[in-house]
Image (cartoon, rainbow, N blue to C red):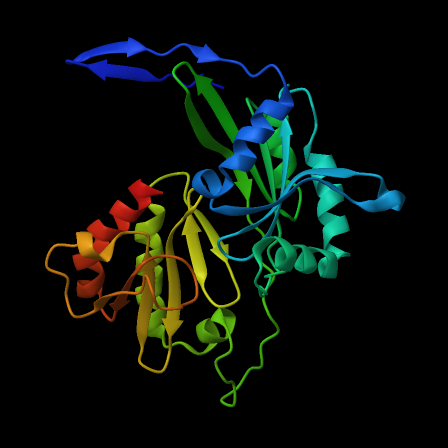
Length: 298
């Protein structure tokens, strides 16, 4: 894979920053754990989490992401190391020990969280990956992300999504007129053709923003992310409208319209401080620049 280069621009002149190497895996782990929320939108829970005497394993880092999904993080220095299988082993262990994880969340975060067990994630963080790693995750029905890092002089670091697979486990739906809205799958099931066409138009635009866009299908909303969320979407079938939440400061929007509001202090599903209601293609076209801004900020 092509190496990532970083340049410093001063008075119109570019100077290349020299790449550096960590000598120990622990150095990468320590930096990430101290900045999990800034780098990846993940709340840190515990380092070197022991899986008990029977499994005799240690999860490098354990956390919960901005969508309340459990996250296992494994690190490696050498591209020859295979942490994917090890991470999958821990992922299966975690699914069998959900109560332990929920108690850990309560202990570390001080609040009770409704954990989304439909989308547990495995993050593998390394200086590089092989094409075999990328191929391997495509054959596995799990949420796996390969994140490449590069360290440079003057304390600069870059993270890049090197590969990802997203799995969605749909809820059981009841067909027919008696269905009541419970979650996104139900909303999609009963939404009108016009509303779903509008939603597809929204998704199509989001996907044009970059090859690194990922769609995460959560219980009550869909999240679109790079490494962190930049837009969350809901379908409101009664009023035939779409709700989106963007990670931009509402106060930074010049001349906000009546379909926008500040929800930084209002509870809602998903992430983002600005809520926008979309009822038509015209509404969507008028706020595309804000979606792009949120993408660029993520």
